Image (tube, rainbow, N blue to C red):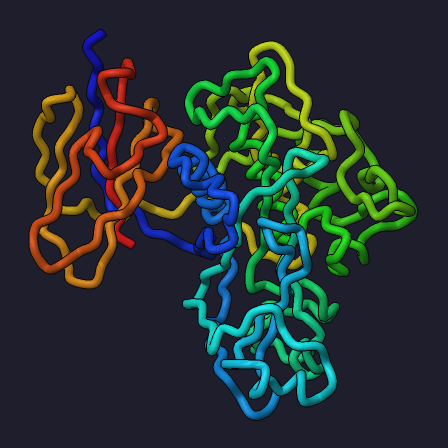
Length: 405
């Protein structure tokens, strides 16, 4: 079938946090599969478009007093893994103060402003996946109380709990995963995009047992965050005082299964393929189990899930950002029936090609293009790049756009 090519070429401003996926602990090579990598980064980009929090940059070095250190759940092993900005055990302030040495010495660690890091990997699990926030690893109290420290980055609601460096996520090696963004397979397969969204939500602090900001809003067996309750009432008309969680006693803070419905959060470009669709009710993303039926094979972020982010302190978009002026892009037809894009680049800039089969749900082509001060180009189906939606020849329609980062 000859494809209908519809073209949108725009420079779209990126606002809020940038979730930067880091694969250094992918010891099993799970993300050597470019489809898995593309879907995880699409899920990370979805949350990036929702959260518009400003985060201070991180610049940690080997200091004679109070080296920065933080800990993760190692995505490849499940072990607690402590990372130190010190160069070695001998220069680690916390070792000299009597703490155990770190598992890894980085000799410095930095993150740009508004960048939130996600360490990703896979291992055998008894569940589909696990996600958690990065924590502070026993730093001195002054590190937690200082809103501008590397732990808080200007985000501090007074509970000294939710470190906003980033999060970790690990996926089960033995599941039947569906990595198709446009047509989730259903049946016995699990939609990787839905699970990735859920686990990144945990990394951001949603329904997470280690996060005091979330626990402080639990009364009895209900989460009573004002924004969350209001969002549910607005979507369903149901009058309630809070949302039931699975089990406070066992520290399972997921929303109670199949208890509540909410509409898909419409801002920040949802990925509607396989979902209930715009304006319809779905089960909450942060429920404990993932069960879908019929034509519904995917869950998206709901209004309730986004509202819970606000309740634990994050800033969330209230409108879509305006489009910036279009980039000066020239285009032509490729031999595969798609589009060939070219533009004059700026040295040091990066450019992300995005594609969509409907003009609404966009995903990044990986990797991005690096500006060199001269012309750069990309062709649909180009060798060495990966487009999760596939070539234009396989679709009835395809849209393209370019983001200058």
